[in-house]
Amino acid sequence: MSTSPAGLFPVPGSKAELEEGTVLSPRFGPEGLITCVTTDAATGEILMVAHMNAAALAKTIETGEAWYWSRSRGELWHKGATSGQIQTVKEMRVDCDQDALLLKVQVAGDGGCCHTGRRSCFYRRIETSGDEPRLVID
Amino acid sequence: MSTSPAGLFPVPGSKAELEEGTVLSPRFGPEGLITCVTTDAATGEILMVAHMNAAALAKTIETGEAWYWSRSRGELWHKGATSGQIQTVKEMRVDCDQDALLLKVQVAGDGGCCHTGRRSCFYRRIETSGDEPRLVID
Image (cartoon, rainbow over all chains, first blue to last red):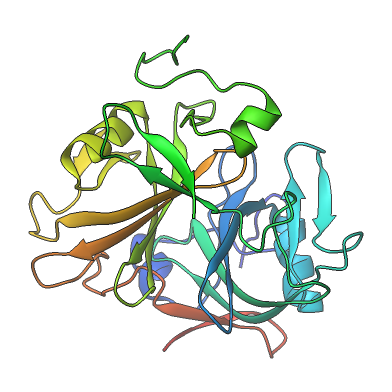
C-alpha cells in the first residue's frame, strides 16, 4: 500500500474506498494540512477549529492527546503543553471524503481551550437582524 | 471602513478588534475561503465541514439559509437546492481570530446532510487500538 508524501498514511484511493472503506487515508490539502474540529466529549460543545499535518495526526493517534500544526508559528503544537489544557482524545471521526477530522476530547487543567481565556473559541454570535452583521458575546 | 477584496466585509483589523470587537471581519484564506462547521441546531450533532467565500457568507446572512462554495464544482452552492435538504440557519458564530464559522441549522427535506445519504458526514469513527488506524461505521 503506497503512503502519503510524509510516509505516515496511505495515499487516498478511489471515491468508494474513501467514502466506504475502512482505511484512514486523510486528504491533506495543498499546504499538507487537514481541518480538525474539536468538541468537548462530555457536552458536545464545539471548542475550536484547527489544522493537522500528517505528523500531528500521527502523534495524536499515537499519544491519545491532541497535536495540531500551528500555522502562525509554523510548528507542531502539543495543545496544552504550556497551558496545561491538554486534550485527551475520547473519540476521533473522519468525514465522507476524508478531508476533515472530528476530535471529541476531555480538557485538562482549567478546562479552557481558547487563547483568550474562554472555554470555546466560538464565544461570539453573529447577530444578523440589523443592517450590518454584528458580533455579540453570549 | 475599508472592505475585503470582494467588497462584502470589512478588512480584518487589529488582533484586539478581531478577537474582542463587534465587527464581523472574516479572515478568508489564500483561496478566498473560510472554514465552516455546521451542526444540527436541535441536537448539536456535527453534520459537515465546508467552506464559504465572501459571496456565500453574504448570501447565507441575507437569506438565512446556508450557502457554501463548492471547491469541487468551483461554484456557489445553495445547500439543498437539488436535494431538498435546505439548511435554515438558527445561529451563526465566529471564532476568536475570525477564520472559522459555526452554523447551527435546521435541515429540511429528509433531514440528511451527507451526499452518501447519511445524516452527518462524520459517520466513521477512527479506531486506534490496533497496529494501524481503522475506520468503523458506528
